[in-house]
Length: 450
Image (tube, rainbow, N blue to C red):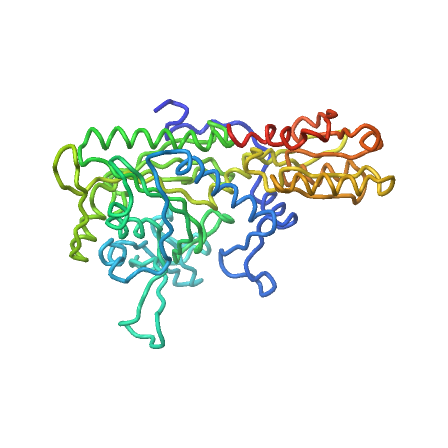
């Protein structure tokens, strides 16, 4: 572990963003809205607007491309949100998935006891109740009767669907250790104190992978070290500054009930360091538990060793919402262009909600028709926007603010010689390129295959 990525490292490059600025931008430009906004919202739940859903989808697709499609040792899965209730008995979540809850006797607010620095209410200074354990799983009922026999839970993690399908995977796929099973999907946790925008919410989306290895300490450590480095570098690859990231090993007393050792990739949010992703050594805990509770054989037959055993697991588990938040925070910038302050999201082009904006310089002279024709061609390959309202400078600024990396302008010369102006979001530099070959130029500049 390098010094700059150690838990003690707090130095970081200066940033222009605050949470207030980012939240304002997200609502103003259709990235993230408060859920049920017309009714005053619903505690720490959010809707993703037309641009936010594209950014979020791009984050998930980048993860899937690098974790599954780009590898020969990882396959995908999509398990159900509702699992048999015995799943959560076996996994230990019914017994262990709790946080310590305290109430203020004066103002009646509730807090996580392990998040408090003192023994008095942080809101009013009042006396706090004794801590009691609060289970974070959402409970509901399946079928017409609301009784114990019909109780089910919204999953608090996607991992258990992978473990419950372990036998199905090895029976139907030609997998050989080491191998991984990955999935993305919604999870739900009834957090006591959610907050900080989309950093901690009760409904969120995960990107998790269970990587199965031989049950041997050296092999486990080798792959654990590999995945810690791999996941740290993934965030750097898509634009997060190295000095805004650090790796923090968990202390023994904060490990999850299933963990033999966990290291978090942490990000320096405007409100301080916070978890971005956790890489855990789960051992054979989950397969052992599900084998015991289900009575099914959840072992793997090693052809080379002629032995049957339950593999150990390395789990990189990331939050889509937190990753999206981190990418936006590090992309947010303010500079001056043509004596005017602009907000620009310097998102990696592969993540940007809109890849290319197409502008007719004028609303006449064939400019709109040619611009729409170009947009239609580009839209077969990338997400596009069309904008003809206001001055060309104002249109550039609108797209810079949502992170659109490229702009294509149709002008008089386009009509004459079949060339357009392509503008770069970050440098604002412009160059003329022929319409023929524009698709290839755009794809190369976006850099999908880097």
